[in-house]
Image (cartoon, rainbow, N blue to C red; front, side, top):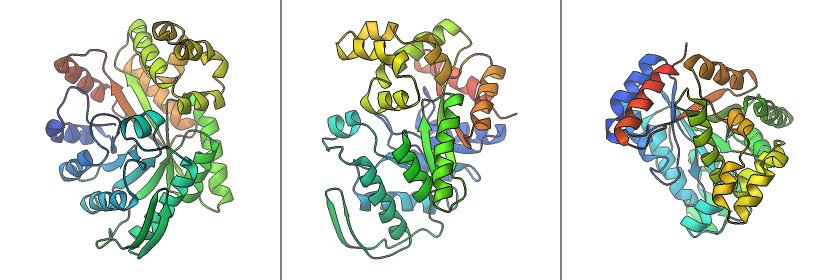
Length: 326
C-alpha cells in the first residue's frame, strides 16, 4: 500500500500501519510529488513497524545531489535493516524543471551514473565520480549500512526498463493495465537474463479509485488521465504500449489549450484498463491479474472520491480493509 493515506495526517499513521500488518499487507511505500518527500515518512514507518518492507516510489535523482541521496538512503537502511527498498527515478519535466529549476538532461545516462555511485558508496568506498553537473571528489560514506537497500529504477519505456533490470535489483512502473504488464515484464526479464541475473522484482503502483460506482470512477479517471498522460514522458509511454491512437484526440485538445474538451475525449476503455475500481472482489481479481502477468510487487494507491478530509479518511480506511490480501 502507498502511504500516507489521504485524509489522515502522517502523525496518525502508526495505528494505520499496525492495522495493515494485521490485515496481511507486506509493504509500505511512499510517493514523492508535491506533498511529502520520499524519505521522511519512511523514517517514521521504520519505528512503527517490525516486519513491513518499506520502499519509496520514487525519490527524484535530479532534485538531490548524489551524496545527499546516499546519505538519506543510508539512514533509512539503518532504521529498517534489511527491509528498505530504494526506488529512484528521473521524474518529469514539470517536477524537475518547472518546480526545481534543474535541466532534465540525459536521463538514462544520469540514472546509470547514479546506480554506479550508489553501489560504491553503500560499500563504503572513497568516491571520485562525475554525475550530471556534480564533480564528486573524496567522498566516503562514514556509516555505510550493514544491509544496503535493494535499489529499484522507475522505468516506463524500454531503455530504462533494461537498465533497471540489468544494473539494479528491480524496476517500478505505473499507470498500466494487467495486459501491459506482460510487455513490461518481458522486457525486464530479458534484460536481466542477458546480464546473467535472475529476474528482477517488478513493482507497479496500481491506482484504486475507492468506489463501486462506474460513473464516479470514470469521471475521476478521466481527470487523472488528461492531467498525467498528456505529459511528454507518459504520453510517449502509452504510445509505446499501443494507446497512441486512442489517446491522440485527447492529446491534441490538451495541446491546443482545450483542457475541458480533453477530459471528455479520454476513452472510457483506457480508464477501465489502467485503474482498479468496483466491488472488492473485482478489485482483488484485477490486482491478481497484474501479478499473473509479471508484476511481483503490486503497490496499491487508494484514490478517494470525496474532497473533505473526514470523508477521505473514512474511505481510505474502509478500502484498506476491503483490499486486504485473502
